[in-house]
Length: 186
Image 1: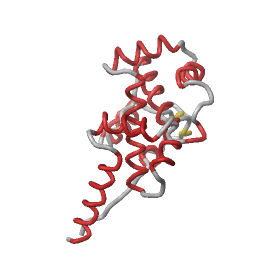
Image 2: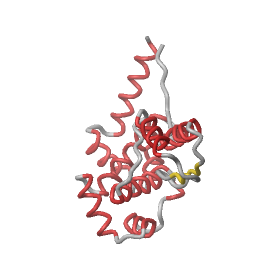
Image 3: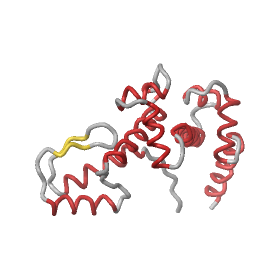
Image 4: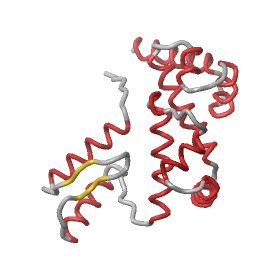
């Protein structure tokens, strides 16, 4: 039997973190995406055990300040793309500068230096990943998806979608529909 599933990565990650912290009896408070405040001092042994248990789920504790900022940039972008209410009224560059308290020039240079790609490219990839999920869910039309993701038109969404995936959104939908029919036939 095959099961299809859908998940929210942020909720899954938070649930794993909560389970692992509670298993180790560590008092904590979940903050913004990617941040936890540990209430009490924990032993080095408990910290190592936490790191080891989280690595099983590909969750890593970041201790380098620049790497922390990179993760905050990614988290802020993901938050914008996946939460329509968070989409800034200003430009994304201004939003990131305000949220992270750094000049945008510094943010983009640091991001490019550490990831070998641009913030703009990361935004496009996240928007296309979200578009793919919305297409798979089949609840919104392409026009509604382009509006949801703050594209100026369906044509612009389609152009970026094809550039990233090699397929147009319509072709992607046909592939998904064909896969569903094949898996239902088994």
